[in-house]
Image (cartoon, rainbow, N blue to C red; front, side, top):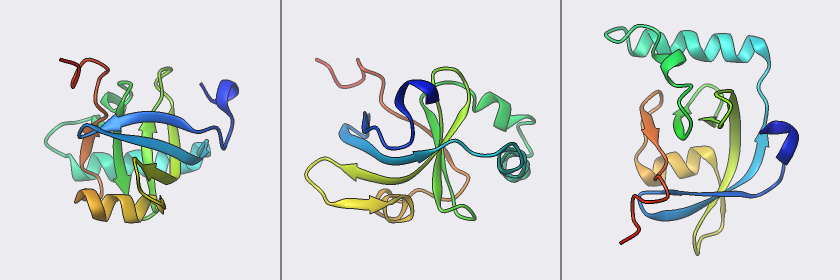
Length: 119
């Protein structure tokens, strides 16, 4: 996915039935991924290898130490999203988005699937 969109292409997805556009993205370093997955596994000790299971596309979590949304792409790789725009709102940092959506650091979520809100 990264080669197709680069760092600033505005990908649009949906969360809690609201459109969310990724404004700034970056591919994390190998070291950053290792540190993040270690934190994620420590938070989810009851479910070993939770970070690897996070490779499921559309899954994401807010990570306070990096102040970013860690999103799994279609290829299962992590992408860091640092700024987003929710429909009809101004561009916000990932931290502001997490606060507004009441996302706790390390808590895993899924973006809406295309048919989640189609009736």
